Image (cartoon, rainbow, N blue to C red; front, top):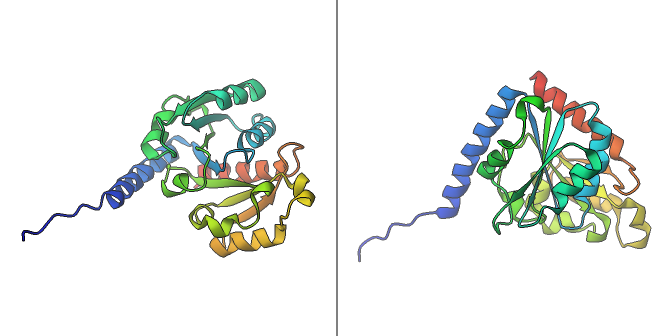
Length: 224
């Protein structure tokens, strides 16, 4: 029997995307733009967190947002109405994630020469977005209290690639079986270098600490 050629499609896709992501990072570095990739499950509070954060940040850094969804422009409109900053909607055509090339297309619609920080609000789920490097400078994810403190154990890749985890909705922690210290332990099990900040996007608790983190990261990126 003749040998059959086997093509590792998934491996090839990831390798090509990694090259695109590295090229995008180098380009952003030359232009002095910091790209943040924000991920989470649907309903965890990404958009509300962004609104609170941007309103504290926009007088200190020049910011724009890319909202990624399978369909609709609800989040982009909400961000623009609540913050006044540039906000564009990216439709993924049914795909559950963004890769580096999709991210590049979104960035091309922003005035990069007038930005310090571009924020990508990725598609809401804990699986697909973790598999694709978007070309971001830092990965941040939001875990909300109602989701449970065991999520780092169930979705290891997502937590292993994140530089920072925001634990949101801490105001309702007393009403859920959510152990904050156990959650931190589970996060550090997946990623010993991860930083954890407790927030409540609804009240703004913890958001100033996140803002300080972003300013420091952007300044460091520009200074390197």
